[in-house]
Length: 395
Ligand code: PMP
Ligand code: GLU
Image 1 (cartoon, rainbow, N blue to C red):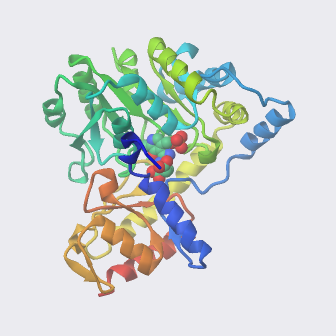
Image 2: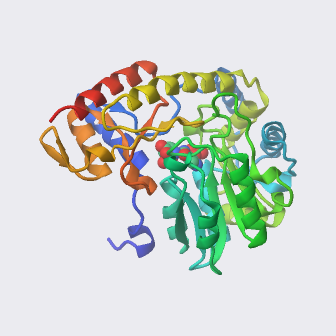
């Protein structure tokens, strides 16, 4: 059947594909360990489950306003005050079916054909595909491990043209776990103001920060709130990936545009999940800290283990739950009888021979790396490390 070019040119999400492949191999009886998808392995907190059950029992099962229920907007406003110290009005909140959907709506609402978005690389796989979907152009600027994942501000300035409309940042970062320093955030904000741009700040990992770091949102800097679109959601902080609740915080006129788009395209996000979201944000927050501590324990195990492997270099992530080792020392070498020349050949090899599923760096705009999600049990991480080590030493 005919498929429009707009969709035909979109690559399926490699993170979701990696998880799918691992599932299919497991169904064939192969003991595949998946390190592909960024999905906390913890159960959704009990109080959140109970709130969803109550919503069902109370027949909260009908359409809501397209941009979400007032109670969740109020909960988001209060949670944002608590976590990033920025004050929003309910008219500046639009609730969608997950942060991915929020990003899709944001790019749809922001971009004219040919508009350019500067995206710091390595970047999450979805940004360039969504930007392309809405006829925009991604201009990647590297913020790599050799510079502690900080961008060279002069490089961003050089990348700005008269078609640039936005800069997109994601800190803590997927796939590197890098966190932008206060100086980097201030420098980027300076460029945004100077060039009259919009800043898209994907803050979905802001609660998963290690070593007692404090979170700084660019929306809290002088003159930045009205120029920033914050993207956030419950998926990562509350182990609620399948509930599909995300949101944006942006000026009221832009938010109104998002709401109109959503009213025609998807209507409201799932009503029961919205009520569960209210409980996640307003109920006890201990589980958020507990999960974060556990991610830090896993990080403290996996990163030194990777660093100790011959030919592997890996920076210490400051947040999120991803290791992003540089495996390019293996390019040109033969492993398990296969010649490895690309990150994709490496991840294919690891899946076929070691039964571990990872994501190639090329999907994040960083050839030479692979991404390993450590949002899985310590037991799985230990076994994965053992298999990886064995696979990298098998000629
Ligand atoms: N942004 C980043 C950086 C992510 O890694 C993800 C992964 N899920 C999302 C947004 C989307 O989150 P959600 O599950 O709420 O769609
Ligand atoms: N964001 C997660 C990841 O990068 C979940 C998968 C996805 O939404 O693409 O693995």
